[in-house]
Amino acid sequence: MTIDWTHFTPGSALAGGVLIGLAAAWLILEDGRILGASGLLGGLIPPRAGDWPWRASALAGLIAAPLVASFLFAPAAPSIEANATALIAGGLLVGFGTRLANGCTSGHGVCGLARFSPRSFAATAAFMAAGFLTVFLVRHVI
Image 1 (tube, helix red, strand yellow):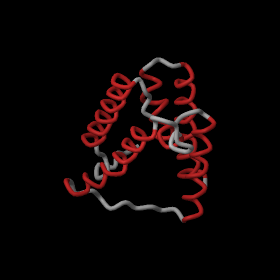
Image 2 (tube, helix red, strand yellow):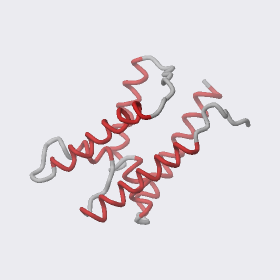
Image 3 (cartoon, helix red, strand yellow):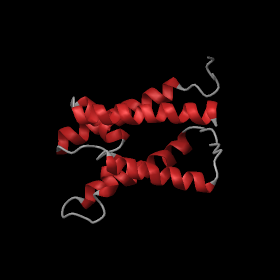
Image 4 (cartoon, helix red, strand yellow):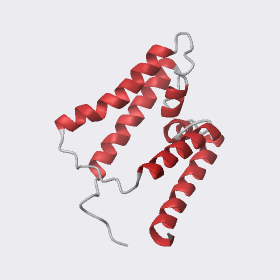
């Protein structure tokens, strides 16, 4: 196995992980809420009294942060090697999986594991295994 040094970005990956961890810690310590992207979005529809402002603010931050970063840094242009059908199917499967697991990678993988949640450990192990298997099948079998 070789490392693609052109696309190996441990610095930005570490910085992103630290920022996500700080945001998750801040939200749980300040408000007692779990930072999970699917839960943020799922809680907006239908809106619950008192829940909408913080959820909308968090989602606005998720959208605004990469836009701000694109002005501050020189990001590489993304290369998507899939057609629209595959992207839509993938998005629907991810949405189905997050509902099935009662959370997403940020909710289970970041917040749940930090709280030593057995359910989050099982969910994280399942989606990591599914990801590994998918990459293997797509790159080496199909």
